[in-house]
Amino acid sequence: MPKPLLELKDISYSYHSLLAETPALSHVSFHINPGEFVAIVGPSGCGKSTLLSIVAGLLAPEEGTISFQNPDGSLHYPKIGYMLQRDHLFEWRTVYQNAVLGLEIKKQLTPENIENVLKLMKDYDLYKFKDKKPSELSGGMKQRAALIRTLALNPTLLLLDEPFSALDYQTRLTVSADICQIIRKSGKTALLITHDLSEAISLADRVIILSHRPATVKFEVPIHLSLPEDSSLAPRNAPEFQYYFNLLWEALSDEKK
Image 1 (tube, rainbow, N blue to C red):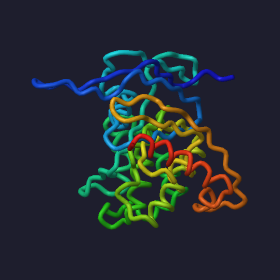
Image 2: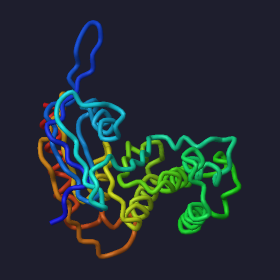
Image 3: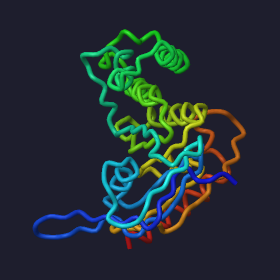
């Protein structure tokens, strides 16, 4: 049994102001295995993005510990790739120049890394648009460009903070499936924050349900879908899909009550 890539134990965090303290997370514990795609769902404002910021190292937990076991056996903080709700592509740069921005900043613009970026652009139908500006792309293409920019740095762990929420529904279905396929083919480990239960079930190997703020882990649901076809809608047509949807819906409905 492989050791978890990421393990959180009893993570707690509060926001402080001059007038009050607002608890956001309370003793949150879970793990993610190498190559696993995990989704986190919970009521609005329960602390999902706060939790992602702690995993990314942007916030320090007030209590608890975070540990990593890198593929090479080292325990240092892994390379993190972070995809936000917006693509944040720079309009004054071409699609290619946006894709290699992280490599430029890290001074890793080597021939090998450039070749890898161009291969990713060819694999995911962006190569012929590499000299275009972001405004000339569709929303889904922009998100693919943003993912390639993230993958270019070869992160060990991908953090996805509702990266499809700005897209229209039809585009969201297709792009989320495409990006999930890209992530799985790359063998990356991913942690997704989403409000969309169908999206969580369709994309994830396991779904973690958080309670109201201060968030705790209510329970975890392993997802096993029968996929008779290979299409973006296949997971939603799986015979088990409705069971998982009802299970998550009831858990979140209990939270609202």
